[in-house]
Amino acid sequence: MASDYTDVLQKLCHHLKQFCEPDAQITPQTDLIHQLAIDSVKLLNLVMEIEDEFDISVPLNALADVQTVHELANLIHQIKSAQQ
Amino acid sequence: MSLLDKLDAVAAARKALLPEGIDVFGTPIEEVYSSTEARIGDRRILFLGTNNYLGLTFAPECLAAAHSAIDNEGTGTTGSRMANGSYSGHRALEREFADFYHCHSCIVFTTGYQANLATISGLAGVDDVVLIDGDSHASIYDGCRLSGAEIIRFRHNDMVDLEKRLRRLGDRSRSTLIIVEGIYSMLGDRAPLADIVKLKDAYGSTLLLDEAHSLGVLGKTGQGLVEETGLIDKVDFITGTFSKSLGGIGGYCVSNHAQLDQLRYVSRPYIFTASPTPATIASTRAALKLLHDGIELRQQLWKNVHQLYSRLDDLGYQLGPEPSPVIAIILDAPRQALMLWKGLLDHGIYVNLVLPPATPDGRSLVRCSVSAVHTSEQMDQVGSAFAELREIIFE
Image (cartoon, rainbow over all chains, first blue to last red; front, side, top):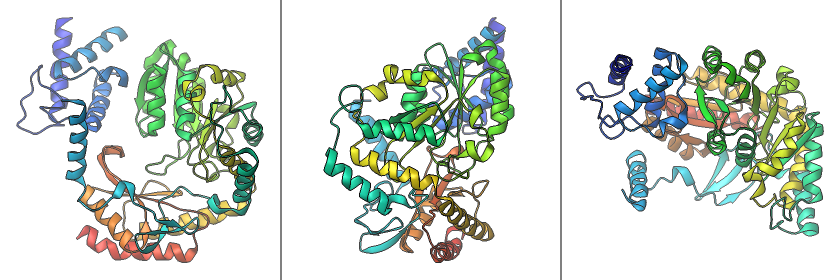
């Protein structure tokens, strides 16, 4: 299970890099809005890419609680696990 | 951040995007001369940014009906339909809308926004799923939030993406409400309704179609996309507004499902709002008759649409994907869109400016709304203004 989360985190960081400045430092604790300047439009586009990558649908309601990279990775992991 | 700091942040963001002294999102309109002309400042301008698709806001029949209703029933109902505002006019308009769509029943709401809020939040609940197009209007997003249902968004008009999401839902697709629009308000394109109907049937879902921008515009009698495609029997619920082709304010939902009437008892935006004024109901009833019989108005509207769309296309502007009464000019930068909006106003033409985050894909839009009562000369005038401004915008 832990390795699944690590895989999700790794793939998420890869996608995130395309949405922020090239020199941005991304860690699990990084704040998506305040540190990576991912606004609501960027977040929805990022989520679309992630949904394709993991073959999941992320409910918009769940995104309201997401602030950090870890929280987004955790959400994806939970949805993916529930689907399996 | 405190309560008021948040609003200061909004003001700062707005200031960074828009220069001082230009009130783009609240342009003061001093006098209205007709369905297509008004005064802004000391200048007579052409309305090309209203949604007055059939030009009925000054139709003599609608004005007379509204005047008479005020004289006979007063200025307002002062209460909700459930408490004290279910007048004969409200009930008559509901019957007339149901007849117009050849449907079992109709509910009339106080605004189009509330029609979506009330219908969606009444139909879907916490254990359900709402599957919405990514370019949906804010009233659809807000209705979904109010419902408490799980909200899933599919890529705009992308049937492969919609199918993928229905498949992922498994059995839950049967308690899923798919929501699409007849004509989308941002780019003016239609929903691929035949494909959507196939998918909703295959997965046992329910379909709601918002005809806000297509009522009066599409179909022989103006029902909207359902009439143009011949799919009225395949759509479960249709919502729409009085504030565009009907030239008033209010909204409706029609359906052949007998359960529609139960929304009156569960839908908070219906229960806890004062009902539409007698004048609004009366002018809307008159407008609905004109809309139904308005074949010539629709022909003139589409003639104007094709004239302007092809002129802008020839000029090399990037436009929404298909001609429609909503003609969107797509620009890469907010600065370009603002220049075009201001340039058109200086030429005596009032259009809409739409900036991120309200736009699809974070692009900026200048949005024109064409009316049946625009003249061919006015469309020429608009085309010439766009031609002159092209060099300035893209230099």
